[in-house]
Length: 381
Image 1 (tube, rainbow, N blue to C red):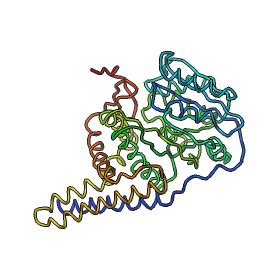
Image 2 (image 1 turned 90 degrees about the vertical axis):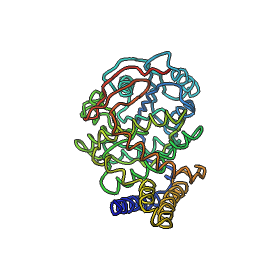
Image 3 (image 1 turned 60 degrees about the horizontal axis):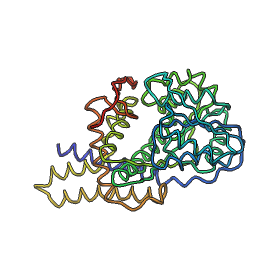
């Protein structure tokens, strides 16, 4: 057991140091240079009144780009997001922006159904789908256009950083994005070409989407963003990383909602990359250090303390590098990184106990193939 725990800590430490090296190579994206400017349609599926939703949606309508269309979509006229979308449209009279209200379902993934309903009104051949909690810089669409100037690019996506709005749960959620998720993507891209997309940005050519089978092919997939990129890379051409960092507004009302949110993420990844996800426990250095310290603490207490301090130092180093290279506005919270690493391990372990997820007020079971089966409406007491 002692030997296995030493190996575990060594593997986790090596991963963290490699991730830090990948992060250190990142630089803030430069302003998009002038380039081709094909017309672009942006599809924005909405659900519910999220914090900062108005500012987030407005950022997609205030693009320094000559010809673009923005389509907001909701399933119900009574959805609070519809009113906010109307306010954004009214504030941008010179922008081709509209609101689609349609409850048509093409599958169990309600977000994909929403996007498909918006797509019926899209005018342009370059499509961008972006989650409602993202905020884009004014040169976002120019970055997209520059990326697709390469004819070999069939789809594209953006990295994103988290901005916490709220208390401890929100700070933990943003820390996960900035210090675990984003570095893991950079590490993955060092090992193989990009073959997935993120909900932050899914950009695709219209003819590629049609050849893929349209949104109907994604209609029952939990990991619709991953599947889109994976299928494009396997069947049609290159998935490119768009050199633009967008911002994810992270607002978790409680630790419970954070846990449910991250369990859905975890079970999403587990459904599409089962082996890689199963081995991802090797990326968490604090649980490895604590387990090793507990194993040797009774006979070598000083060494046990040293092991824990080593892991704390690795997490502090990651936090520092993220603040410098990715999220300079993020407040210092070194202790939060330690707590977050332990929580990440806990979410990883919990994800293997069941396949149920909650999403937008509905409960689903995730099949082994990564598809959603509706169980019912979530009832809160």
